[in-house]
Length: 198
Image 1 (tube, rainbow, N blue to C red):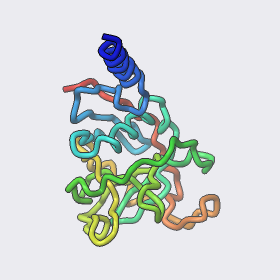
Image 2: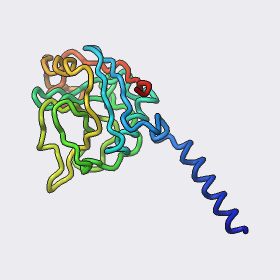
Image 3: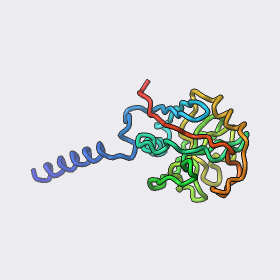
Image 4: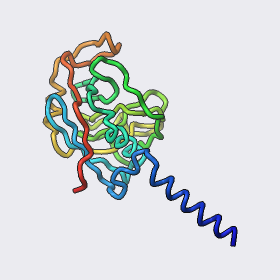
């Protein structure tokens, strides 16, 4: 009897903890394809996220979005015919605070194809936190093979022309970031909003 009661209490407690967990899984938890709207200084982009295939990555992204973590950041790296990257720095070129790195879900079977969104990372395959990039080509070199790849977690469904315009901006070496391919005139990600389920 006591053992049964303990088991029931454990299950209830686990359920309550799961419901209050704020890793992004609490945001539209029954929606396998949540959408976000990105309002940028060059126009709006709508991205559909693939939670069924990359749940850790999508939940992580939704967590930042729901806490306004991407608002006022910049797209700091633009490589024509390759990628448009952002989400990590504010307009003063200061790195934004991040949650802990996440597991690399590049083995989901999704490919780094044109207009997909993927997580940026360092050499450590499990070092992605908040930076993301749009693939502006079919970038097979970013897919997993002998080594880990870059985790795809969604696709642009509206506003492809906006990222195309981003690729045409003048670029330079950024002294503030110590990186090449930075837009001369900042491209600002003003706001990211989680859209209501469709």
